[in-house]
Length: 243
Image 1 (cartoon, rainbow, N blue to C red):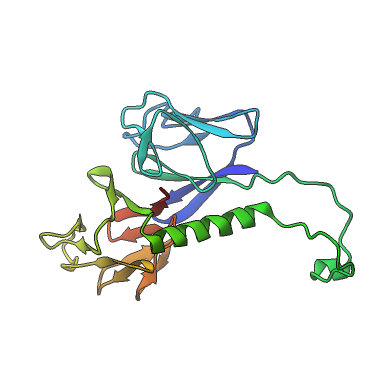
Image 2: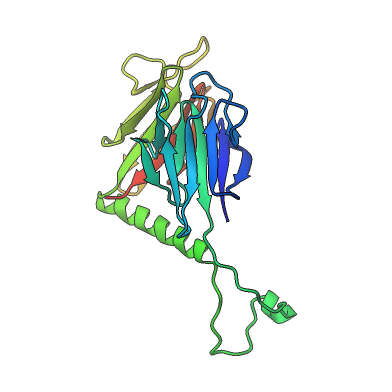
């Protein structure tokens, strides 16, 4: 089953199943996914379900463009966990992509993972394998210095993408910060992203108002591919682009 997660301020607000051949996205009320924002075109983009089980996203000549994983596109095949940016709004494409087979009800032993036949083949959820494989590839890329970490930043100025090539990135209102987080009571530094050989870590500072995937954090957290970050009034998406 494929569906779209509508994400606002780092939290999933709605899940919309892709249960027909075309899903439309835009500001007009006749869209399947309606985003009421003047920066979103009336009919901004659409997702088309191909006959081979693949999904294609198309920009419909929108004013502010459609972005997938930080890159502006006209059309692109979607992959599981792709992040779609429509102006300041974030959508996430989820595709479980499993062909279900009708099976007899499980016995109590089978339900608890006990298999009497040692030669029996165990059915495994392929989406879990794909997720673990992707995580392994990302971790390996970071350690080998092959992956490009990117941060999609969405604030009052619009959207931009930063490639995290250095070892330290500051978020705050002080001059020289890589990402400005303003406000009357905002600290000079709200948070810092550190890059080491083991990956990327987000460290919140006092009064930084930092959230990852909708949860407040008060101590350093290792960033994972796809993490949604909010620092005061700024929304960000962290991901690793594999070379």
